[in-house]
Length: 163
Image (cartoon, rainbow, N blue to C red; front, side):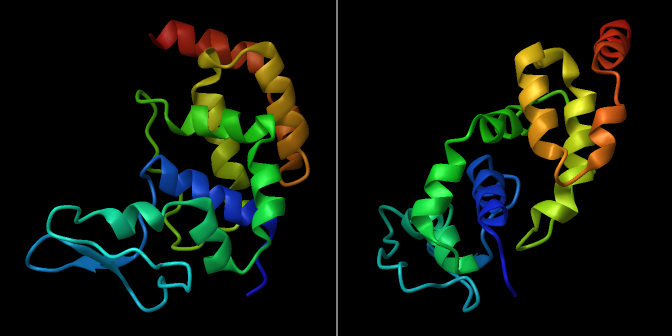
C-alpha cells in the first residue's frame, strides 16, 4: 500500500501516546519481540532480561514507523514538527475524553482518522486555545471539510456546562 507522510506521523503519534502499540509478543522472560510484519531493517536493538522493552520502544520511534510504512524519514520529521501535530497529540492525551471512537487499525491512514480526530477535538474544545483551533481547522479541512461547520465556541460552552 502507498502510505503518505501524514499517515506515518499519525501512526507515530498514536504509538508515542500508547494508544496503538506495535504488533508483537513477549517471551516467558517478558522480553518483547515484533511480529514478522512489524520487524524492519532498522530493528537492530535486542531486548535483554534487564531491558526487556528496548525493541518495543524502538518500534514506537519515527525512524521505525517511516521504515514500516516506506516513507521518507526526513520529510516525516519535518511534518511531525508542524503545529497541528502538537494539537493532535494534545487532544489525544486528554485523560477525560473517551478515545474509544478512534479506530485501532494496525497501520492507520489519516484520511480514515480525520472524522474521529475532529470529534475528539470537539469533545475537548475547552482545552484548545483559539489559535490552536484555527490551526487545527486549517489543517484538517483538507481531510474533513465538515470541520468548518462546527461552532467551536458553542462546543466550549457545552463542555463547560457538562463539567
